Image (cartoon, rainbow, N blue to C red; front, side, top):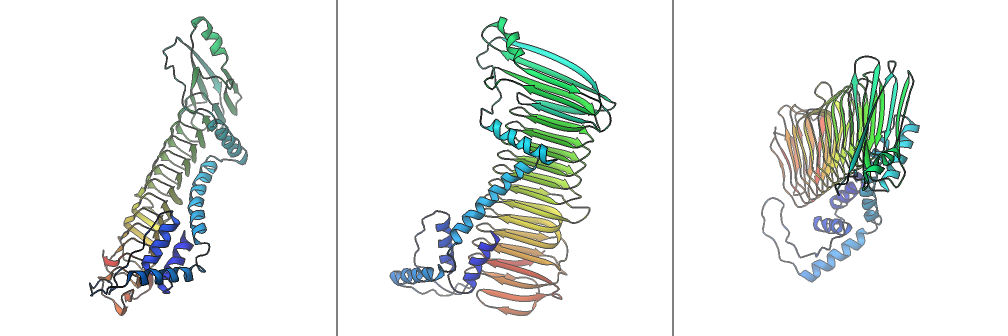
Length: 471
């Protein structure tokens, strides 16, 4: 996306195509039909008198210009489509990588989710009100500190809670239904639950015939807090809490929650929501169509979703990367203890960053970008059809670089900032409210120096305004 936008901006600045021609090309690449109409020309932002032009001549001239520009845009459409496709592909790759604590684990879990996704991912229900039969089984195990706990339940919920001591308790609840009450115990017998434990490892595995749809199995486990837990389920919910070991969870259509984890946490779901809260290590999660909510993460966060929203707050200690393809992304109160690398992106949603510090990258295609109360040494923001609003809370002397095609750019710069400014547009207004010297101003370009000019502030737009205001 960066390279293509820069190319079209550069072509406009070089006079190879006009702003309206650029918008026409972008519309064509998006698959839209755009009728080019005669326009009026004049001095940008001044309301100067416009001239009437002949429609046929203008359209002919525009056609010639577009043909001349094709040599520079030969693969532009394909590149843009490939770029948007890559964004979604990268998000989906995030789904596959989020649960990888090891190569073996990540591969097996990804294959499992793909296999599950081929079937019906809805939790079976007794919609007809048939007779039901329930069986409960509880078993205890001894586990040493740092033992591994692996749960594989394709038929229902998994709940794991950390407790003091060295005992693990596994409770399995089978519920089946059918027409004949006398046949239900045999129906429950089709569900095999394997419980195998040693001092260093506990395995819980549920197996059923492929055609089984008349029952569910819910598992609740209490384990020593120091245990390292890996849990998978198909259409059930996965809930892991109060654990000090590493935690990993995968579910196809159920929600996933990781709460009060004293180590790193990883999670993946296809269509469920993800909730993270009070994670003392790094967190990495992904969902294809669910939302992500993350709060109080101590050592960095990676959160990817394809069609859901991402909301993250109170993240410290490591890189922050929050991305969505078609949802909104909101990140706030992060990197308050020390500056961090922060990336916030959405293709068709909006991007919001509030109260943050560090090296910041913000990107959107058809949504707006807003950053409020930020302190940074470097800020980059880029959108195609949305506006950019940036508000810095401290005097700035680093690098600010903003690009938009059809949106406005509004930058609030605190007093005492030191930057060399370059604002460019083809049909919008250019304005700087700060006192500046070495100023050069035309209809399409404004340059000048604020303070010592130690930093750099570049704003490029095709058909939008570019304004530097007091912070």
